[in-house]
Length: 83
Image 1 (cartoon, one colour):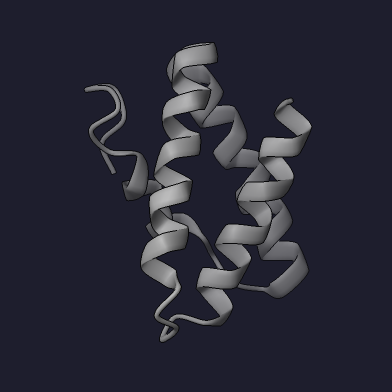
Image 2 (cartoon, rainbow, N blue to C red; image 1 turned 180 degrees about the vertical axis):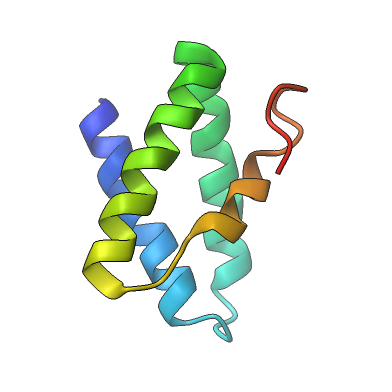
């Protein structure tokens, strides 16, 4: 399941970074937030940190764009996650 969520997040974040003016971005952001809640429920803040580390490395390498601003989409899931 983690692999599927990782691939979905890669696709969603890549789309958002490459199509920032698309009307679909808000829908994609909503799904990114939902996946963050699922990850947190399954593995806590460590799961969020680990997933984002992998996402950032892959996306930065594949499309040379930094997804770090999307970390804030997971704000509010836990007080431990504030970006």
